[in-house]
Image 1: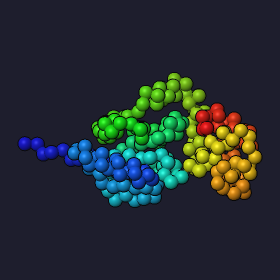
Image 2: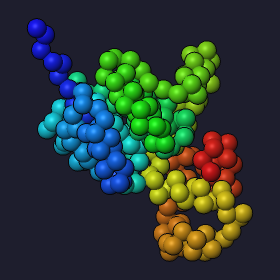
Image 3: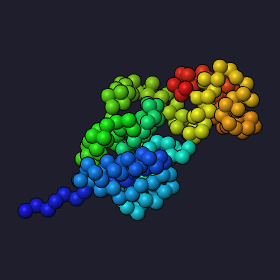
Image 4: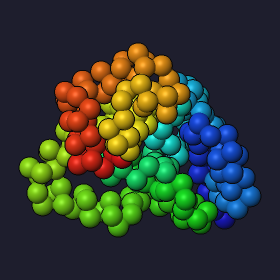
Length: 224
């Protein structure tokens, strides 16, 4: 008589308490073959919990309290058997593609049905990849046209270096209709000198010189 299979050990990493609660209930209530072993709400806690519990699957949100989880993705994989599945509401193909290149085994949207999330966990645990048809097409395009893919990869790295706050400021610039820095700062509920500091950091990361170039870059790369 064969012994029962070991449960799939899952860790959830997201900075939204409500989503963590919902995923916990989903796993505990409808997936008896899975075991929730840890949750984390920020990158540092995620690394600590992953080392402590050694999960099979890490469901990882891309944005964690204003920090990109891409910065910890290689560490989550180094020396561990865990497979990472990105759980994201972010539709930025460049960021999601970079997550895959860093070792993630798939991407599932936060708006996906419960059955889809559980199916993704099972597939990735079984050694398969999980991604949308759009992501699959993008990766096929990179294989067919590597020169264009190299350019996109470079831009993806620049974009991934932005913090969540910086991305919000970029979006505000795109939709500001040329508003002055003073007015834009008021819309963002920050001081004008603080806005200038953010913009300087954004310009350096994206290799642009001013707000006009930032607008053009953001529009071209669909950051708005």
